[in-house]
Length: 247
Length: 247
Image (cartoon, rainbow over all chains, first blue to last red; front, side, top):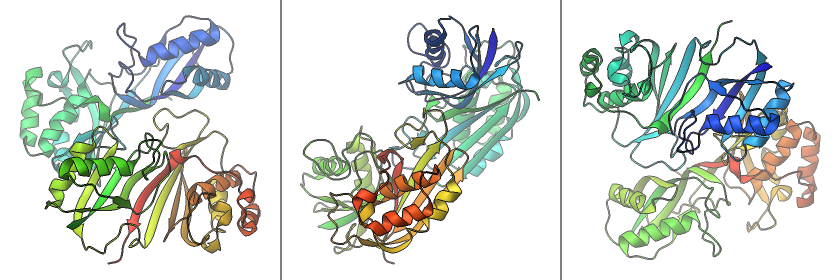
């Protein structure tokens, strides 16, 4: 048995999310079925993060155990051939220690959220950014975002379906930058609650359009109540961009 | 009658190109039909460049004459509403002089061509970049590209269907830059021949993979013969990004 680490890019639009679901296609199922077609082995593929329906990944980390001997490069090539025509690409494959775990060994996760802030609808980036037609003040969003950085009870920013043991997380970074019509929000933490990034982005949008002040954002955080959430941003603009591991 | 200048973004994948065709949908037809639904007027929409099937635009310039009075902003909003669900967005509309012409007044055109140079197929950028799996030397491509800059007879790099009076054009800029796995090629000229950018990019790819030298590229140019063309790059990676006008 060899454990392989995979780096996976995917367009989330056709999928119910990373995790296997009975009611529709998932990234996990597509990769597991590709492994089975190549090796004849039924095995599980585990990821650093379980993204929602419509959320994308530039570089999701995952692992899979395979009994049949494989050169990592050959495994990558075979997986890519069998994943067609799904919008899933295995960017890299490497052997790792048997106790390396894409989810439990991960010590840092990074997401990027992209807003296109202009009047006109999206032609080139439909499904891959959040279109916000009202003008947003990205500097005010960035300033308010710093209220969320640090160790907090993020109950307000957590889906009711979240399975995490604790709502307390440490947010390492939440940066908002504007490049022309594009607003990019970068979020980094050891781990996130279910819907946390989208919930934070939704409330930052309210700050950007002047409906909320930074104090309103602090009040929502301190309420520790999902009902205090202003808005949950759509999945379209969210990309999983990095998983960090020791050494 | 008022002449409006339009700035148009579109995803070229579902279209036969800019120009109206009898055998399939075009960007021109979609916009003309939207104008007709809004105003009841049958009119022509003219663009700075007639892009091929599958070629995209970040900011194509176009113009249209409309008899019914319209605020430019209202026209933009109405066009965007009626263009749905086509992946076409009117980014801006403004009134211009009656003798302003999107094609004939244009004094500079700029295209960007994007190659993703990696082993894995494209998940996020399928249809919006050229996937080249063999390693390319972008510096060699940039150095060779300078052989094409200036005033030349570009017959080799011209489609047999090109309707231009002369194959002589002045290429102002052809820059090749690498950003990680992305190779971006920027081409600027007063005007281009049909297929010129894709034909230049195709040959530069041969230089990048070491099949052609810069001298081979010069020989192809000097041959003034379409049969000397090494390769025509696919439309997927090509974006019309700017049209320039006087003042």
